[in-house]
Length: 72
Image (cartoon, rainbow, N blue to C red; front, top):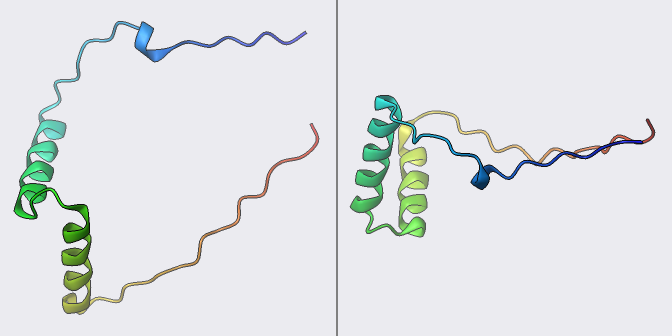
């Protein structure tokens, strides 16, 4: 017989993460989003424009198929 054990993360009492690197990344992300009025379409458009003018090769690959494991 197999026993399934589930733990709900919301029920675990974990202290908030106070990582200075994570905090710095979040500040930069918020500042970047604020430049585009928190509009995801505008952010993506600006990134696509930056890709075109960067002079770097941008590779777009097709999605990979995930094969489900069968059997045991």
